[in-house]
Image 1 (tube, rainbow, N blue to C red):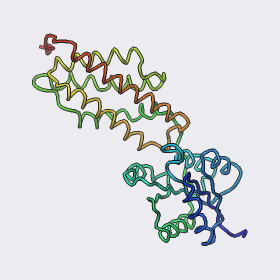
Image 2 (image 1 turned 90 degrees about the vertical axis):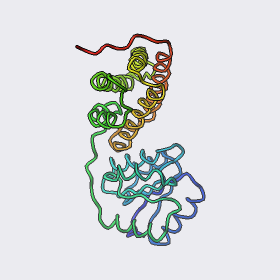
Image 3 (image 1 turned 90 degrees about the horizontal axis):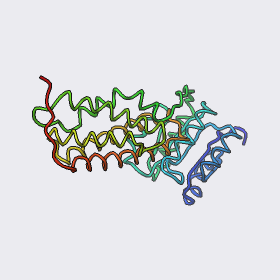
Image 4 (image 1 turned 60 degrees about the vertical axis):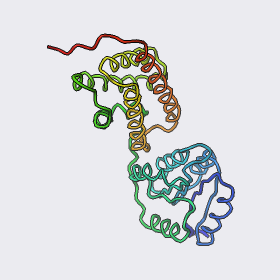
Length: 273
């Protein structure tokens, strides 16, 4: 029927592809079904749609965002709805809801899903696509917020060394991470040297090993939260490569810092007169 509203449905689960599209067609929608990101991108480039309904994880975690981004860039009038089987990811979905019209959690409540689809199609909104940047460019812009959150959560330095000595390490470590992402080398020599220096300084400041580990883990978690906040403006074609580099970076930083910490006692740092 020419008057049917067109939906692109993307899901890698065969059982869902066999059932949900039939329900949507029964309710008057023209549904194109795909099971992979590449097939979805091909349909987006060849057909006009009114709405995208995509699983969050298509083959690989987060692949649904690739499809959402492609739809936003080529058909900005189309509504976008993400489906996820992981309710714990709701916080990330809320964080990007300025670019995704809505989301549903599996198993979908069909009457509610139909209501959401009709509501989003009935109120089309063309959003301006934010500038697409590499992950390291986003982190560069987010440095102040990341550092503020890190300072608030990182373990305090014990005794008389609290304050300036600690804070001076934080921007440098974040800069080293950004440089590693830019170069694509998580085990860059300069990064490893800095990690060793950090371990030595923390030992001399009276840190416990667990505090050193917590400090780096807190930074990793806050950086990942920044990724979640900015998913829709990060270049998805390089994101997973950069995430692998970041994982390697934190793994090597932790190893080098702990090795340096455990290498032996040194005289305490002297405070400025």
